[in-house]
Length: 294
Image (tube, rainbow, N blue to C red):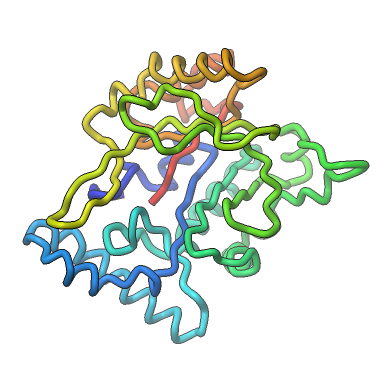
């Protein structure tokens, strides 16, 4: 992504998958509910801020107009607000994922949706059908006898159930992930406060945010001034160790980070997973890092 007040990654999804990122956190928004003009008018933005917002307002107008023509509710990937960062239609990102999965038959990818505007499962799945990703979707019903169990990666690859979806706001949600708090600052990032309990998959939120003022409006944005420290081996391992000390068997399945390419994330994950660190040219990733995408 191009740099923006609200952006939290440097690289495209295509590049992230090639680098070894196997879990993506995507924020879903309806741009109609993120109306840009009132925000711009109320902020009375300075010239340099107007430039930031303007390019995304153009994307907003184009995508929303297209959606209205087809009577289809637009699903956009935004962060903080579509007025600040509108990365485009969900379908465009899914096409990159499909290309990668078509070319890499042994890769298992997970998507975690932050469903801000409460899209239904049918609305979301229709985008997967449209781009040809539906056949890759993990179907828990295939592993429900006598009760649901998580298959190993080998089984998922063999069955071609290689794309796993989670969402925070769906009736079908089964609360399968145990996660640490996502309200972190640079000072509290190594703490281990659980947001839920009694689940099998464990998610470590290891990213920090801060508030900034744009005239009279306060917005929350990623902490970028301390990235090397936040994404260091010591910082990640300290949080993991605290969680292991406080909760039985808390070795995270997923690690959520901002700007994965800054620091020593991939190397640290290899240490946690007790495997040799390998570059994207020699992939052997069995412990995924999540990249929040916007």
